Image (tube, rainbow, N blue to C red; front, side, top):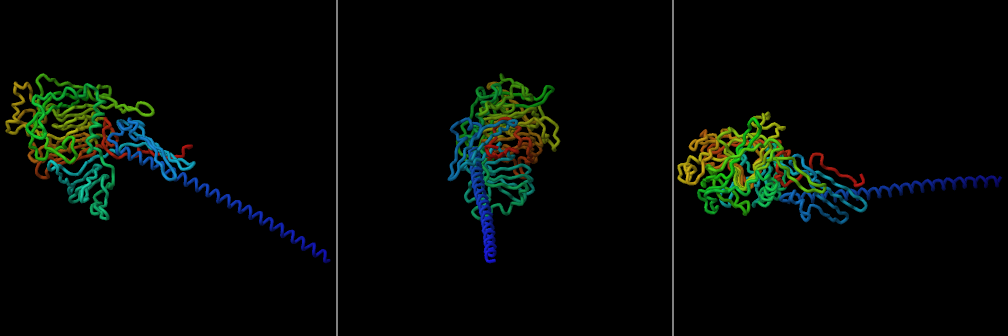
Length: 572
């Protein structure tokens, strides 16, 4: 019996040992599994961390590329220079990236750039691949101020009751003390986004706290400056435009045969300036432009607020320029008419650029380049009508002496082109773009006597423009309508001789601009309740899509194109 008992005890011990070994095995397996899981989690966490770091590095490369683009006077020209910085590497403590910018294609006349940035961290890598376009605003200002002297400016206020239905951008003024760079009185309403180059805060003080409710479309701060204030940028883009313009419409060599010559700007006197006159019309054959070369503009020096930037100076040095009084042409100069509404017309050209994939071309657009000034006006056509896609660039001033509309039936309100209307006009000047005061030709001043223009001794003939065709009765339309994208490199858009202007109606007329504005400083349009025009501006939505030919925008901000952002692992 004793032996049976011992046997049972041994059997129990054996079972216990088996159970203990089984438990140990199970625990070991569980432990190994947990260790494997922990190891896998750590490996996965490390991989995710490396991928996150590589993604951040790739995004940093993208941001560096966008910053480089924002600093260029002309990205299209910059990409052609291998030393310009259109590609590069950024090294970080635990990662690095390589980025590269290239011209990808055109949508119409709007260039599409491609930024590819690859970030690396250990064995992980991520790619940011983005198609980028230059932002097109609606009303860009170097400053929301008008010149009031040779080196002084004064603010222009958005006033009570005004409704601004156009996207606005205002550069950073860098004033001291740091006040708001947009000037507001009363309660104007901004229906679209407003971009400011400056910050919202002055230290801890909120400069915009009391007016934020006026910005229905929102307001963005610390935005890149528009390059219209950079004279080198303006020259660069105008020079590129000139190089792509067809020789027939490139008035660079034979313009400027003024019989009297330009006056020294340091000693303003009555003067003559070379100019080309353009008249737009539509006949049974289509859209046309009539060009009269070698004209001479008789200038008038006493405009109260007619300033422009001194060339070669900074954007805060001004002189009073001589406003348009009238013009005349040599008797042996004949006007020539050209078609402008068919892409097969000689006036249409494409701008061509080298890229990694070969030559990339913009869609055809009409281009006219003038080394000198341009007069847009006609006594025959009422108003002038543009049919075609056309950009006009002048190294001097562009004087508007007639209403200018585009062909086609508007359906978005009076004069506003339909979104599918293909007809568009761009006006770009290194000087100013201004609506003239035709009443100047009526002044009883011997220097401005229109009889000078008919003097046989100088063999020149007076050229009437505006709604009145005689030398003594000259006036503009009421309303005065301009449908165009206006870019002013030497000052501001506006009207001449405000303060002494001779409106036909005797009261303030309406100035209707449908398009866009890009200007270094604000220009004077009218004095409320006194003189000049009442402004009525509407954005031409088509311009925001880059329909205007010429690739000559000055925005400093580059943004992803719609559906243009892609990020991925290189092996995907």
